[in-house]
Length: 178
Image (tube, rainbow, N blue to C red; front, side, top):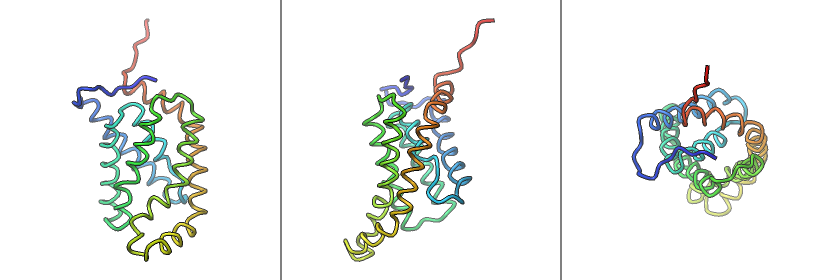
């Protein structure tokens, strides 16, 4: 897999623009799919950003999280977003060299299943410890199943085509000979 990330730590203007574009795309697609419960392309787009930009994907994630807070308000759920998407970046970094759509789909599906319990960690103290956390987790199981299943399917179907598009954006459009 081709990767654009360099080791010198400096962002180019092109990389900065692409990272900002990915944040805006994640936000726009989530907003467009907001009427469908736990169905979104966030995991897929974040995974692709990690594949091409490595740890720099955190810029994209935190711009996206900031946009969520600015539009929907800064509340307890927003605190979860500060760490839950970073967990996905970490998982994707561990699998970054992987080229199998199936492995990416399984990782995204498992992440979707764990999204609810990860988000409820901040509720632990507010809801009375383990009992409150467990009650929230059990109540959210149907949504977590839907989230995991949709992540699996969308990554399985869209990883390769979107990878090809992002590869052309990140690594430049090759000119065809006349």
